[in-house]
Length: 404
Image 1: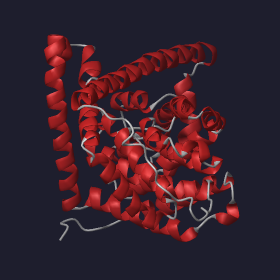
Image 2 (image 1 turned 90 degrees about the vertical axis):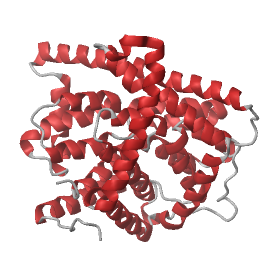
Image 3 (image 1 turned 90 degrees about the horizontal axis):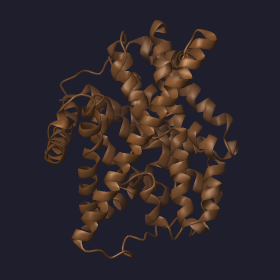
């Protein structure tokens, strides 16, 4: 029926089992309530992840779906390119302008599409009912599930606006879960840009796996029991009334701001990494990224990456955590000597906002709605990045079983 038989070699199975055990053990070490961990939902979601990864990467149906999604985003990027070319002309196709024009500027167009879907109440319905469906299997609350879908479709900061009425009354534990979810996913407005740098099938697979990996890690690292009457979804979607063209203007500017912010962060982080690399090279004869690579080599090896590639792979993974995923994706496109399996596993790992720069964005967004809760998010900064790192790691472990 699926056209591709399911087959795993023993080595991959061993690395998968060891990887899952290690990731869950690392989450367990920092668990806020070790006795409150529910094992059944964790096992259910792990099985769902395996089925999803297999279906998307090993079956004819899955590959067809991923191909269709890729074709959809290729068409969107083509439309976005027409707008970019109209404004910037030949600059959009020449030299060093290519990355900014062809990778970052399309964020504006995709942001507009998200705004249209939200304006006509299509997106809120999708978020609500997909979230309700997820809450049946993840052992978490409806709000937590709603937030996971919302973070993916509208962005890590914007999704908090939809639940702003609840934020002042939220417990610290629930605030941590919502923030960790935001840091472990990616905004749909950026997906097209990712697909310009890494294989689309890895982007699609990572997005879906990360959602369930997030629920698994949070079920271990931050378990809690909701009391009756706490599990409510109260959104603010209807509070701000706008005309269609007011909405278009707002989302065009929002998309432009995201593109500019990403470009500014790339300039700052790439320059900073270059400077630090130079200092380390002069002082110790080894660059900072090479040092990070050696430190992350055991992590890379745990993903069934050959040891002779582990240092290079580890450097890219570490770069993602300490800077952002765009910088790491650029490094991956320039990497040499990495085999197909290594590139695939690293690609899955890179697709999330789990890095230290995201803490400022999330805490700033929450602080704008409730100052006290924004300070709490900032206080949890390291643990949030650690949780997001484990989410990416778990998704890479699962995907590694399927990547040839």
